[in-house]
Length: 339
Ligand code: F6P
Image (cartoon, rainbow, N blue to C red; front, top):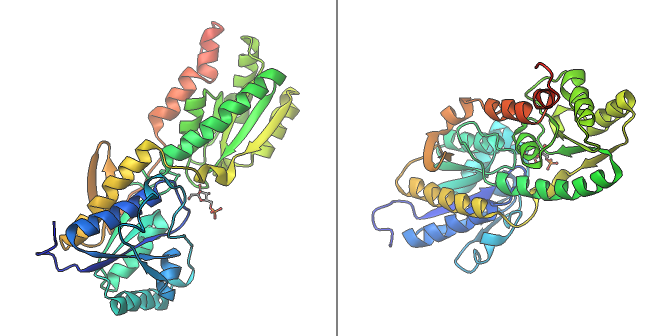
């Protein structure tokens, strides 16, 4: 379909903040939707830093080929201090005007949305797409990259379980998530971990970590898996405390940035494609200052101000469930103890 009614002639797309598997499928979808609507698409490299530097490349069918299966972001990404200043934001808006960009699609987390909001205050049309392995965007039940990151962590932990079982050790695995425990919690459930530490929850070390290990040992287990979110404390400290209290042989694995890499999963390709498609449609319809997001199976959009004012907490039902079926409660019942 050729764009006959929309005033939008050219849009820019950028990725910003920590990369996430699935950002490339979003970019591809943005490019292909633009082609479908007769809109020119340009890639802004290195996020808002690239916008300030005018670092752009035209994106056509060929340039977006193969992106559906590529991890990372072809557009590169950055965190930009200058763009946090009003002068930087004005310069960014001036670049958009100079380049004739009728809208910007920005893929990233809260920081990216704040940058887009600032551009919008300078009169530029913007739409945000949630892309972060942390799944910590309040307005969206899902963020692109989360599923792939979970699968990467699970695959690594399954391998660890083999060697921990052979040596009868306690494994303490640190996963990403400086401010959010979604990744840690889901990974812990999917790996059958004994306990999980997330930044959103205080733990009682004795009750929530040591006692499950003790009880697990009492019912015959000889290897133990503890998951720690990066923002919940150091995995090395956790392992040291476990060793000091129980004399169990412990090993620490920090999965780190390996979780941000790799070919996007089916879910991240699919969701990323839907969100990129919706983002361009919104701009073509003359909408601005929006974030496209997931509401379960549905794709919806919110005003950026509203999106940024929302707060996401840890999924209480999952947190309760892991304690009931894996941790102290479950083990107490197995031992016929009161919980
Ligand atoms: O926001 C995604 C994330 O991977 C967090 O989980 C992590 O704390 C942070 O980025 C790490 O960022 P950097 O790339 O600066 O090491």
